[in-house]
Amino acid sequence: MNLPELSVKRHVLAYMLSGVLVLFGLISFQRIGVDRYPNIDFPMISITTALPGGDPEIVNSSITKVIESAVNSVPGIEHVESTSASGGLAHQRSIRDGEGPRRSLQ
Image (spheres, one colour):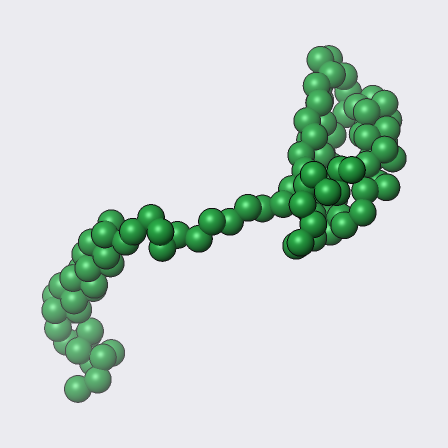
């Protein structure tokens, strides 16, 4: 008898086995030490500005383009994302591995 036949003919047994596996997983996850979690730093520069009452077009022309032109000269940039919304701007830049945010801003 293979697993699909067992699951169809004895569905309660299949539910119980699934529940036991989930229970063991939850217990194992709770007992894992904090030292097993890796220390990950995502190298990213984030700029957020606010312009109360500003349209997205005004924010784009008066803030976003100025910030982008000033920050485009930073070496080691991998990905750029700018979001102009009503009343503000969110600008994020991902930095290549090995490049620190402080080194990129020098």
